[in-house]
Amino acid sequence: MAADENAALRGRPKPILVKYRSSNIYVLLTASFSMFTGMVIYSIIIPLTPFMLDAMHQRTSADKLSGESANYSNQGSEFASREAGILFALYSIACGIGSPLFGYIGDKMTRRKIPMLLGILTLFGSTFIFLFATQFWMLVLARLLQGLSDACVWTLSLVLVSDTFPESVIGTQTSRVLMFHLIGSSSGAPIGGTLYHTMGYKAPFIFCIILAGVDFILRLVLIERRNNPKQWFEAPSTGSATEEPRITTTPIANPKNNLGIEEIISISSHNGDDRSAQTDAQPLRTDCMMRVLLHPRVISAILISFVHGYYTGVIETILPMHLANEFRYNSAEIGVIYLAQVLPSFIATPFSGYLYDKYGSKHLCSSMLLIAGVAMALMGIPSSNTPGRAIPLIVLTAIFGLSSSMVFPPVYPEVSCAMKTLAGKDDDTSGRSYSIVNVAYCIGNLIGPLFAGYLLNVIGFFWICITVASMILIIVPPVLLYSGEKIITLSYISKKFG
Image: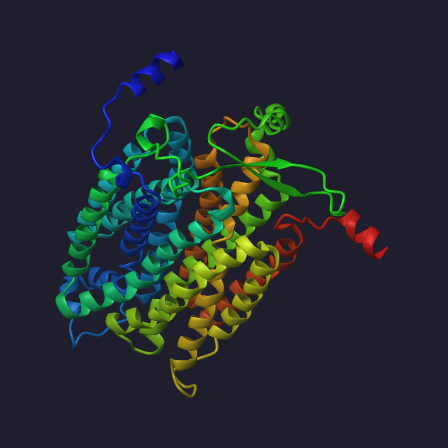
């Protein structure tokens, strides 16, 4: 059956411009733009949320709360903060359910492009619902559809990158894609706030529809190298960049390493036969996913992803409310403050990928988590009565944005390395491995908004920042111990210092 299918594939005509439509650059462009589009559409409603919910409580149009003379009425603010938390939490629920589903489908389907196209169509539907929403249940439905769409985009875009690039540069390439993820999530707020403030409620969502249309075209044109005839992608034997070496990871004991775990990366050609990797990995196929979940590097990555989703959800839920209530800022001003996270991410995210490929994740992630925790704790101090008003908050937001942007990029390569070490040579489990991280992120992003939305009017903005900072700092020790190639175990500590 497999032979017949391969023969049928070899008999297919070669598509036009296949060299460019399957090139490394085009794959990276498509994955990056998909992440950017999904996160712009996700975050564009952040500065709009207080005014959308306020308009629903006033039983008026959200257009009437935009413009130069518009102000946040603070009517029903307690219910508005809870409803904002519910909206962000529902997104996380849908994303958490969709990530493993699309990860499994992506691993099993011959063409990963099909679920990606369905994902963008779902994104179109959610954006149209936002455009015409007049009741809270419509916002709920739109947010659920948006979560499902982003689960598909997030998981399969990174899988495309993993399929295309060798493991020796996967940290750098993943960080480039995640840079657009962070740019999209950060720039959506100022774009949405400015468009809403100057052109009305519908303008941000029309902008989103245009972005989604471009994204759909890019995905439609893409040709995957996976499960297509190799003859389509063959280049003259001049060592061109399109002939990437294939990377496999094999756990090998290293006499210089006293820590008990060491990964040796071996590079073989496309037609090479890595029998040792296949022999070592073969017995692990039946319970590969459970072994991956219990791998120390994966546990560390899951902790980082969970906390990253948690504090992201908290900030997105309560910071607009805090700026509107405490500083009386309008939607455009709230959106501009989010620019404090945009500029650091341009530099921090690709630099983080470079540092990961060169030095690993252990000290990189633990030090950036430490800085992020301190910055988060200090973010609760500035108020309308402190010198400089919101300026200290903006500076602290920039520091937090810089450090948090450098924490997340190493997460996916860490899981990928563990998965490729434990999985069989022919097992295609990259979709499921990345979905593990996405689910952890979504669980954190589910708990964070609910926690912040319900407690903002109970314990206040300051104490929420303190609790979030405490959660960030708590995971620093396990990340320092278990991330990276060198796992520091209790036996090692007792041997070294006992």
